[in-house]
Length: 590
Image 1 (spheres, helix red, strand yellow):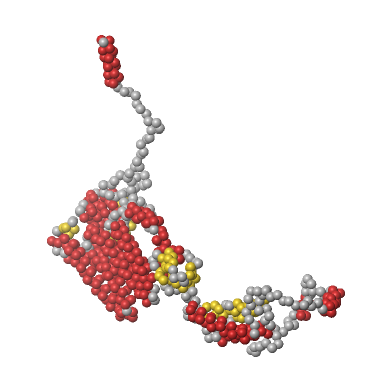
Image 2 (cartoon, helix red, strand yellow):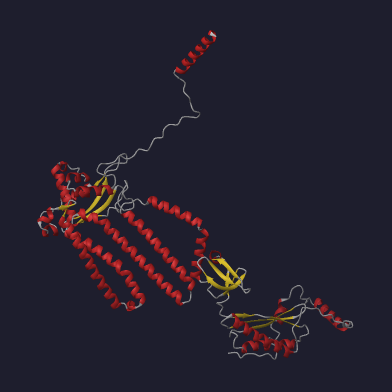
């Protein structure tokens, strides 16, 4: 018992030693260890936002609005020694602002490139962008941004040295804007958003003035159009004038507002903030014009379709009109989002992928719609036409956006998808201007040559005399002798408005031809064989001897024209037969 207890204690002690011993072994996973991937180095941010042309212009405008001219000077290339003084840097920045207020403009922020490489689709060198201009009575300056870094360093966009030199040397002494001369000191000293209150008040006033003046111009233009355009009072002319009136009014308002604010010397800070609104209004005016022109074209097309009885095309026109309007709205939203600075690249990619997925899912529907549009445009058939589509004959009952229905002669309805119909062979019987009359008569073998001559003359006379047969010469010809009949083919054209009338005329002509055949003394042949029972008549030995003598003489004189004819013999017998034969009518030669 004591031994067992000692043994148990020794085992317990050994277990504790193993448990408390530090585990120095390390487990290793199978396979090679992966080294952490190095992330691409990101371009360090610039505290002034000068990595892109757009950031440089926006930062410069903000510094001017804050009246922090020392900070604004950091957006300029001031490489000359004289420009290193703080006072000189501030002077150049203030001069720049005064020139911009007097007659300078920047491109709208959304148009200026937001990429580090700048614009590459212009005619300027890489690393140089044109972002605005200054035009006053004394000065004309193009505002260029230039990337001051090489390829190994992050980009740094600043106003170029040439631009800064032109601004620094500009003479602005004594030049004041219209607002500086007119506004009282109170409205210039008190500021709202770092802009004099008077400038904001003038912006509001100029907005109203531009709107009213543009309205007056639109009225004058409309009056002149109605006076000199003869169709202005018509429904179509009125619709065209109404479609253009609002977009033109908006465009004129924007143009007048920009011109007035620039000439009056409104602060560049205010004008740059309004540039996005102005550009948005311009895009809205264009979209409204497209919307109204879509309504006008849709209304005009539907009116014409209704007058011509093409009711099935009206639904297609409405669908196209609504689709066009949806596209206008989508394009407008994307354009406006791009103007206000929203990156729509991801949205466009998602929209493209969604469009592809939708197109694949609705492939048959789109195919049928395109087929219906082609049917409406080409008009191979209309409602009420009797036609044949592949092996199906019937009358068109309806042409829808997805399918077309035909009613067959068995009074069944056949529905054909428009995509399949547009790719099928369509034979339309409804638009024939004439109907061919082409019977083939077979007469009995007992018909004599004179009877055949009588039939040819009288059948042709009938076609000439019938008023429903086209004036083009009808053809009646004895075309062959078959194993059991004499064949005569007739070809003529019947003038008729509809297929039913042509059947009536054909019936009348056939009945009259039966009368002529009856009068001739012969009759039509039937597929049959005639067995003649007669006593065998021996051949004439005298005629055979005479013919043998004739052939013998040909051989003796080398005149047997087999296998080839002698050219001299051909010349002797040429045109020796009379045609037409004696007794036939011969027209007088003119």
